[in-house]
Image: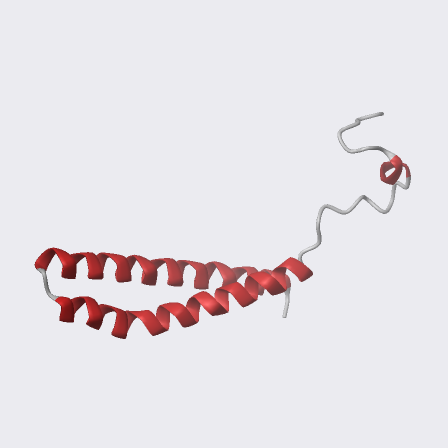
Length: 91
């Protein structure tokens, strides 16, 4: 799978689990404010599992991307760049 598609999926799952986490926190907070323990438990029971699954998928994609996305590699067309220390800019 191309890196660009994985990056898109990562962003999509990141947004998904952050939205799910926000839903969990706000829903449980509302349950605490209202004083309804059943509400707090129901929010976790219904919104928790999908949020946790999406968070896990996002983590796995991030792990894959850490191996597939190349770090700043030196330009292979100029061997002299490999010998220069980081931060030096000689013309």
